[in-house]
Length: 117
Image 1 (cartoon, rainbow, N blue to C red):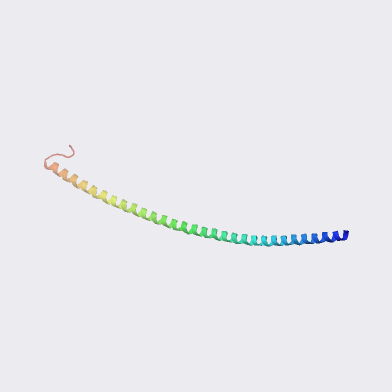
Image 2: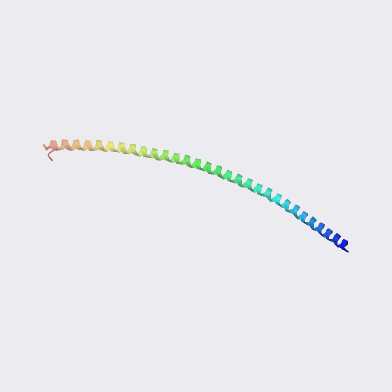
């Protein structure tokens, strides 16, 4: 009877051991799969971040180039406006001198001293 119980226990233990070994093997396979998936996800994320960084760098370069172009345009417009204002100022100074001379001559024509008026 004891021998029979012992053999039965051995069978149960062997069956339980096989079951546990199968579970361990299954878990090891799942772990390997999860590790592989994790590595693939990590690689994909790294590639996406690198692409994002490249895009940001390209966009920053384009933005810097646009800013330089706008500065050139603004400086060019400012220089043009300054030149036009200088030209207009010179023109109106000449017009003012012409009017002053005409008025001077007109006053002297009537024997008036412009400095006394």
